[in-house]
Length: 449
Image 1 (tube, rainbow, N blue to C red):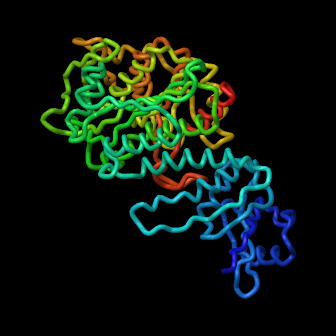
Image 2 (image 1 turned 120 degrees about the horizontal axis):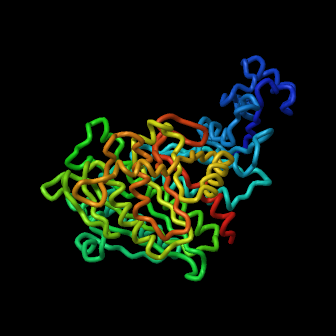
Image 3 (image 1 turned 90 degrees about the vertical axis):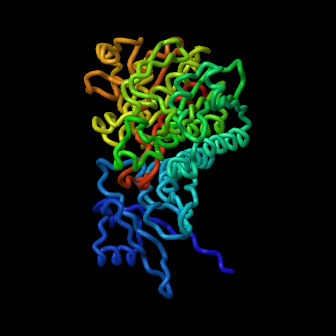
């Protein structure tokens, strides 16, 4: 059986056809087809016997060219094996982008073979595999609907994840949450046919700096008794996107062997509707001891995170991160592609924001504006779970979470969307990774292997 050829993909800047290193015949073919290096355009170059000899890929103008532009080639090319040629930028980032652009979620339909890339010679092959595996893990979990990824199935996936990486795992399930001191997690998930739970994973030497990751794991969110509209419920399979992205980040940390003692906490629930559902007006005592008045059962993510963050904070980690698909207000403010970033350490916030663009993982620092704490006031409890004025929803949610963190040296909160409503370079439509690469860049500088 003949081996399939490795076809070159020539990156051609806008207006740079003559300087792209193409043969005269390739230049003539491009000109005849109106190809001038337009951003994202692909043009096949014919070979002998009607075959394809190469592809031209438009890199567009120099200004505004994203690091992940090669992702458009990964999305657009048909099945085959390829190598990158020309001015494609950083070889590792280009290869990651190409691979992420070729991502397919074919669990429920006939599989379509993705294009295969031979990594550029100077690329870091280990880093490529690490980042692609992390993003693929997060995307696959988010894209899987709740009928196949309820709390039971998510726990099974996390157990397999932990076993494959030599991580210890402990699970607190159902009514044992009350005995162990996690009343908010229990309250949010108790109406589901599948019990709520807290998954607790650890890895690394106890003597190394403590890094703890917390991820919101709501496998489906009806809104509870404050029920969402049909349109509002349509994408709620993605409400465990925080947990999915935390697992992706954990993979990069373990795979790279960073010098940390890693802990991963995933509160996993389904916010369902039944006679046992928690109600608006209920007052529930949290793990930290603060009483919380329920103003809206659709503000459930911050409740389960509160108990998990309180547990994480008890051992005073050096670096504490939570990731959650938390508020629609974040999308109104910054859109789906730019997650707000909150931190108790302004230097860390700046460093994270600076790390994002180079790996096509942008984050935008937002203020923990203390005057808005007043919106969380309750007349019957220590704190309410929703803001009284309806303004600054993402900030107010972050301030709620901050109430449960007091001992961690650094706390970072990312209010991610976890979904790409429109295709971007390296990000096909659907469940997506956010925050993984930016956080990993920062963590590997702070805690090198």
